[in-house]
Image 1 (cartoon, rainbow, N blue to C red):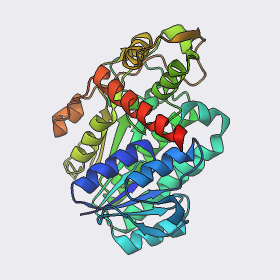
Image 2 (tube, rainbow, N blue to C red):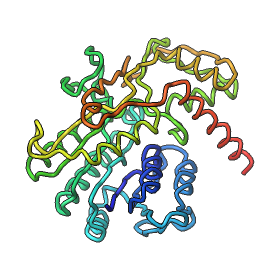
Image 3 (cartoon, one colour):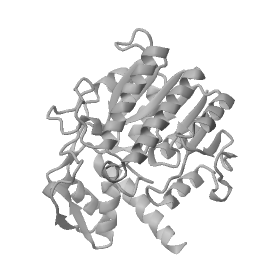
Length: 343
């Protein structure tokens, strides 16, 4: 099976590629390596998969120096001609689309970036999958589509008509676009609504990263909504396990919505923000200095995944509890940044 993964310099894409390569799959990675956050972290993820920064050039296919079954090309999903040429030449069986402009707050300040990447880019992926008879498209959606829903836990059957950020709106649009292509062209698509993913090599703009850095440096931790927030924190290995499992669960004619399916993927155990901070304190062996702030624009009070449909479909059960996951992250974080400071 030949697999395309977009967003492979990103957090989840990097971990998925490592898993697919280890499983012996012929895999091609794509990323535009944008500067939304420190690109050094993106290049270090690529380096872990045998892709050297000095050799990367736009549109140039690189063979991994470590893995014979992995190649990488720097590419924008908005670049329709280059993307079409890639699909025409490779003939992928399975596509994971994890590339997107992330960040709820960033979408308020930089709206056009989200339309270019998350809407136009996803449209190009759908068209390429349609014209190249891809057997299954799996794409990243987000728990943000639920907005400030009062229905707890969040179910795929809930109405999600009121997004409170452009990022959330772009992810809801992806689901609608995928449904249209599944309906019109019998393209099997599976959307996964991710719930607050964390772990080693995570994004520097996420809470765990920001909190660990502030606590370690003895700086104040910004606590929004005065700490009255809860998140369904999900360890990255559990997300990757779900991504791999759904690859073989392909929606067909007998699906309730033919050729289209959508799943929540989370831990199903929301954690209060103050408990989360205490867990990080324990892992680092250092107390946090708390700085209370009101609710931020675009934020939601709680996320809580009902994953019963995913469990029923592929026997999905998250295996990493918060304490263990935070410990794994902080071990990596201390090792990575102590090494980075000596470079």
